[in-house]
Image (cartoon, rainbow, N blue to C red; front, side, top):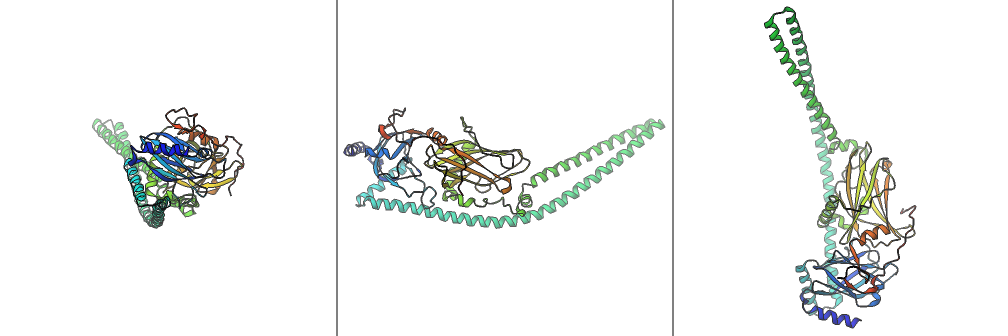
Length: 485
């Protein structure tokens, strides 16, 4: 079998050799999903060793991408070779099982190998050829790849430090601005009070003048003098118009004052007066949130990527909603529902609908996810790669509805496991909520974007081994009493 695959690889590779990957190391972790992107539709996936199909589960995503998952019925897996045919090209990869890979480890990037750009693919293959011409062995090639990744990681960490320093500077600047705004607000309120008092005085004066004019008009009518009556009527009409104008201005000022008062509650000064001075910081990350995020959270390019996906998810009404409600209401009236789960590349996006049916603000607090095993034991925290509101966690006003997106690197969940999303209010006394995502639900949603690489696949264009389908056995258990502390 191995010799046949090698001959097949060489024969297919001749035509498009300049774009054929030859020997790139692809890491597969026990608790993670590996993704490889290509420029064209994937037609064939083959392992060099038939036994490899017992340990690795290859699937196709969105035609031009494949995923590889470790079969968790096993504890370890052998390294092997894999050939992928797409768009007239034939690529050979070295599949390396790494049991130490942790999706929360900031020192290691997501297992996402993006070869979707043809120009970049040619450059990658050319670099491989140059190294082989120099006599570099696979170990040296791996070291070069690892060196490039380490540089990327160091750059990310440096960016994270700069971002944190910038946050600290912003916090100091915000304090200064809040104090400045407070002084301006006091001056504005003083001027507004003076203007309102003046308007009231004018309205009262116009009211007096109107009553006086009315009295004169009535007196002129008793005297039965036509001219006096006409003039009195004109004066009365004039004073009536002035009185109405003054009253309208007073009403307008009152409404403007009420509007400003309502908005003032959500200004930096207003938020400080309502929350900040009581020790509730609504400007920065909730306490404890930083321990729940990974390096991806801080990188501008990653943030932009996630923002675009999250924005699309929020603004797209996806059919067949999951509508998994949280176990309870926060503050006796804030309901949270998981509407959809979407898989994109190496990330999983969770769309949440938050409805505030209370007469108080909902202050989104610490938001995080735990992964539970088949025995309902918390096996690990899934660090957040992105939250819709990274810089300013939302304040959802009374009577309002808002959508949030929570994103993580995709965990290799099986049907008898589960993921649990925890959402808190920044005020502990308001409570928290949890949303349980069973492994069955997770894998069902995942299957919507994946084609199993098996002979049972209904897509005849994907040519693979029949015995690939070695996914873990499905089964459900009722989830109770999840604890992680």
